[in-house]
Structure formats: C-alpha cells, structure tokens
Length: 457
Image (cartoon, rainbow, N blue to C red):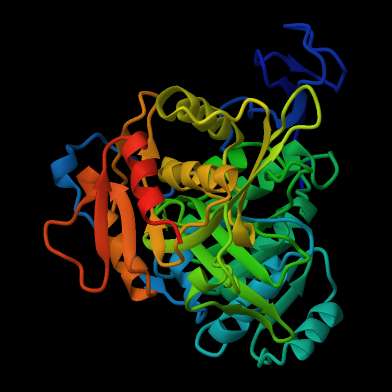
C-alpha cells in the first residue's frame, strides 16, 4: 500500500507541523498537536467519497420522501428497548462502560442469537478466538454459526466485511484498531478518529449495522476524541457497580429512538438476563417502618420506575457539615436544603445530610426534588412515612412545586405496584381518577410537608 503523508495539526488553532513537538508553533499551546492525514495535492482523489453515487444538489425539503428505518431485533428485550426497538440497518452504535461490567458478554449473547437467522461477524481485537469460544461455552450459547475475526488492522477488517457482507458486525474494541496510513499507536486520538470514520462510512454505504465497543477513562467518560460520539448514531453506557449483580444500560444519544432510555439486566452464570420488573430492584423491603425513606416515581426514557430515596440527617461533628449525595445531583441537594430553610423553616445548618438512591441508579431529572425534601424532613424529625406513599415533583427556589412530564404514566405505574397514595404537583392531578390510588396535589413545599405529616406511618 502506498505510504500516505501525515502531518500534525493543532486542535486549538489548526496550525500544522511536519513532525510532533510538545508546543504548537502557531498558538504556543502545549500537547495540542495530533497526527492526521495530509490533504492530497494536485487534485488527487479523496479517501472519502460521497455516499451517494451522484453529486448532491440542493432541493426543497418537500422533495425528499421520508423513509422508515428497517430494524431487526437482537433477541434481548431490554437491549432492544434501549436501542429504540432494535438495531437499524446501516446504523452505528457505540457502547462503553467500566472494564468487566459486561459489554462483551451482552454483545456475544446478541450475536449468538442473531447468527441463527442472519450473518453476523464478531471482530475481536482484545481476545483470541479460543477465549471467545470459551466464554460462549461458559454462557451455554449456541454460537456455532457466528463468524469470528481476530484482527486489529483496519484495512484487513474492511476488506473482510466487504467480502462477507454481514448484516451485523461488532468491533471489540475501537481502541485496539490501527490504520496503516497513520504511524501512531493503536488507541491514539488519530487512530481512533480515523478507524471510526472509515467504519462508519462502510456501514452507511453497505447497510451493515455496526456496534463499536469503546473504553472509558477514569472518570467514566468514553476514551478517545469527542468526535467519536458525534459521528455515531447511538451512544450507550453501562452503569452500575461491578460488585453488584445488576447492570443498567442507558442511551445518552440515539438518532433512531428515545434518549435516556434505560435497560436493566441481572448478571447470572449464564450471562446477562433482562429484568422484567426493574422497580423491584430499587425498592427496599423493610420489616418495619423507617424514617428518612420515601418512594420516588421517576421517568427513564419511556419507562416509569419506582426508586426508593433515602436520607440520613445527623448532628455534625465538624465545623463544616457534610452534604453527600449518591445517585442524585450534589448541587441540587444544597439548593433544596436552602429552600427548606427559607420557605419551610427546616434548619439543617448544623446537620450532616446524606442522600442515596437505592440500587445504584443515577437520577438526573429534577422531579426527584420533592422526594429528597420529604426524606430529609422525615429523617430529621425521625418520623417514618407510610409505605404505600409515592411522590414526584420539582421544587423551585421560590418554594413552588413544579409539574413533571408524563405524570399519568407515573401514577399508573405506582398503582400497578400497589401504592395507594401519591403526592404530586397540582398541575399533574389526573382529570379522571386512577383506580387503586388516591392522588393528592400540592403547589408549595409547605403544603407538601403538611400533607406528609398527615401521611406519617
């Protein structure tokens, strides 16, 4: 293969240098030069041609005919839910997570099921074929029809995929691949960007669904350039503690489905199994009434979930009281404590406050505010709330209770799981009564605390 000329380009100012150096000659920034392929001189053909055979021309949007994307199920219901109903032909999915959390296991299970009906290829850059076969045997998977390619060279992988024409290909992982046109090591920014771009172009041209496995950094974000998340169609993250038997797969980006969709899995000796009733995981079964615990009805994508929120308020033994939040946003905890002090005369300035979402789930929506406030007050007063009480609602700085989206679905899910009373914003009161549950509307944090005292166990 003819050698391709490479240059080093600054990510800050765009200046180029013939070789790597620590400081950019243009803007004097340090460690910003990244290897890239030089533009061909003399009008040479570009490595990236148009996806369509003809030259694109400007048209009115009305002249384009919308087309539904064809999907095919992976055979794992929770995985299909996160994807928005299944894999899309020509779609590129990036999946990341901590080492050992179950990325390769889940994809091997999906490939084993799909290989019985269509051609699927597993490209492994980290494990040999014998290691993958051993895992399939341990998981008791029928993977005899699955095609395996232990390879890390991008050009060889693309040639194989173009010849075999699979319907689905998995690259495990994108950080292990390298292209011959670049001199940098596998896993570098230049290699990851080049390999991802070439694989994405292949998927769009051939209609092959592509799944890329990505490594994560110490803070849990995907390693490599941020452009990696921009060029793919969907970005999925594994969440959860590796010491726990439960795994959460969340969609942070999805061009073909709902964003922030959540799939819940249980790790067993036969691989990952979908959990049909995930709310049971996040609800504790107390033998007696306990203070500082209340049930939140949260919304994850299109699925309502019931999560137990626990709070512990304890006298501080240091000059600066601690504010610790696990699974909930830390800054909102400080804000809610200020709202309780200003509008409800609840004083926590000399108290350590700890808040936790049971089950390792991460809750990012503000509709958890009301549950956090009531859990804090319950722990401070040492008065437990009744077990069949569920709630949701956002608390504003003025002390008002703001409505949450999809309130009807949340209430129906709570009623289905046996909750008899719900404390919700007045704007979320249903127009028609929901069988089996009494809905109480509040519009101020003071009203919510007053109603909560009446509902104490």
